[in-house]
Length: 185
Image 1: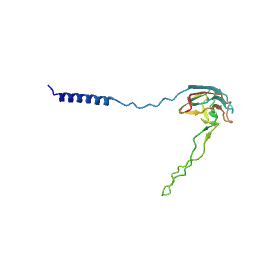
Image 2: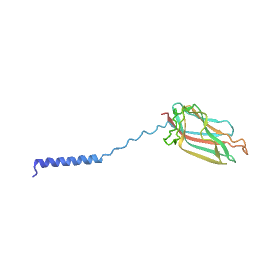
Image 3: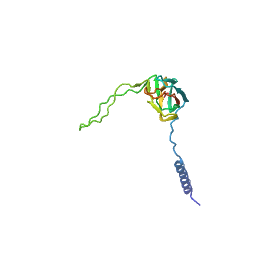
Image 4: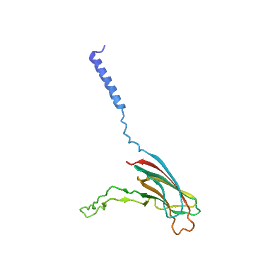
């Protein structure tokens, strides 16, 4: 028969072993960031005739940002079409103010070359994509890895402005844009 002290020590050892096993079995789950809230999915489809006037395709509602994730441009004409573009118009989007820091010079006289400019940069009425050329009777797909953002009140414009020296009658371009409306952070 075991002495009472031996029984107590056995119980304490067993309880300690169980506690250690429970602590070892617990794992901490990392915190996951909350997913971005998507207000809605947007698809913009427009045929844009050749000409110098941009076509207003979509105005971003107040309090939201449009992130265009895909641009698809189709040329149904028999010759290549250059001059298609996606423009941003409307409200300006200010960027945070920049500060001026002169380049640092080491004791040996070598400059680091790092200079920044002061002031506020704004972006208004600008071509976002630059000119797009689409081969005859084909489609060009632009899957945008990071997306193109349009702020509240800005207008997505589509443009089909072929060069003046076009060899034949310019074709109409069909634009299809896909994106997401997300609340302004």
